Each structure stands twice: as C-alpha cells, then as structure tokens.
Length: 275
Image (cartoon, rainbow, N blue to C red):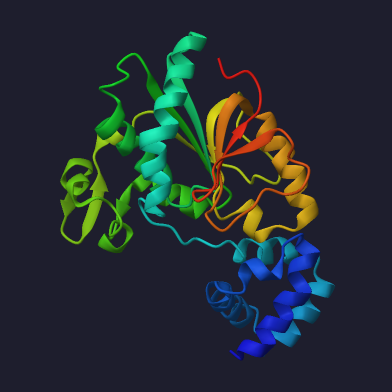
C-alpha cells in the first residue's frame, strides 16, 4: 500500500461522495487499510484498478462510502466537554425541562459509534445529577450508520483502552469486569435507544434538549451538505436546547438560530424560548 497513491485516490473520490479530504487527512490510515482489504477481495492489483472499477460499477460507491466511516471513540472523550455538561449545561436544561412540564430530558447522540458517548452521558447523569433532579429522567437516542457499531454498542463490552479517559472512581460503579473486558452494568443501559440511521438520510423523530454531533458532519462532509444538515439538526431542537460539536469543529455559515454558549468546548445554544 503506497500512501501517496491512496491520498490521490481519496482526494479524487471523497468529493464525489460529498465528503472533504481535510477531514480525513489525519485519520486516513484507518480508511486506507479497509481499502487495501477491499482491493484484495476484488482481486485487483492496486488503487488505480479500483478507481477504474468504481467508474464501471456504480454500486461500488456505496461500499466505498461504508469504508470511509471513522470509528475512533472513547468514554469521556474530551474531558472538558463532559465537565461543562455536568456543571453548567445539563443542570440548566433539566430545569428548563421541569418548567416546561416534561419529565424527561431528551438527548440525541448522532454518530454514536460503539456507544461510548451515550453511555458516558448516562453514567454522568446517574452519578452526578440524578439526585439533584429526581423528577427528571434522561432519555437518549443514539444513532449511527454502521450496523457493526450499533451491535457493539448493544453488546456493551469494551477493552480498557476505551475507558482510559474515564474518572477512575467511575470504573467500578459503571462496569463489571469479565477477564479482559469491561461490561456496562444494566442500570446504565436503561433509557438509551440505539438506532441504525445515516444522518444524511434520516434522523430520530421528536425534539431534543441536547444534541451531540461530534466529529462527524462538520469534519467529514462537504460545506453544502453541512449547511443542509445543520438546518435539520437545529429543526430537531427545542428553543434553548444545546448543540455540542467536536472541539475542532465549527458550524457552517447561515446557522443564525445558534449562539455560542461555551466556545472552548464548542457548545452552542438554540435561540428561542428558553423558559
């Protein structure tokens, strides 16, 4: 596998799938390994032949799209985000939910991978906030386009490398250890619904108080698709709801309904009735 050849291939192919090369530059090795395996499976001799194969077999583009899914995730990834959610964002949103007359704080974890993000939220709520808001429950809808990732999330088994960012005091509370794997305890799986959904094509119904769309839309998709999806995401948020992006991401131009809430953590708030 020659890196330069794969870089040239990705720079050619990604824009045709409404993706952007800069988002893949630092994580391309994961994609290149999958491409290498796919080329071998097809009996081709290199990326040049694969490019020609794509041009002759239109259905292969869907397979290539699936090979370009980045699946890097960890529990408590970007500590500052979860600290801010616990101290500032979730308490305020829980109060808003209560004043609205609802009993559930609804959260959408978009691009949830193998479940680390929604399970972190469930643990954070139970350990740090549930006692302060006994009348409020947390309902999480977690979506991902990759059926393999959804199955791993449902299995709820992880290696220690996925837990290394977690507060140490949480590990025994949240996980039961089985040899070399760590299994989420059942009480932290309640209230989480996993759905196989591609955010480009569908999204869960209803409105949400908090949406996390980190390191997906605003890293890997082209500008026009970002603008299209931000409108749909904002449309699924209550007035005053929060949106969390990846710490290196930015909302596209035209997202006038969003205002910055916590800049360093890339947390925005929807302008509107905040009760």
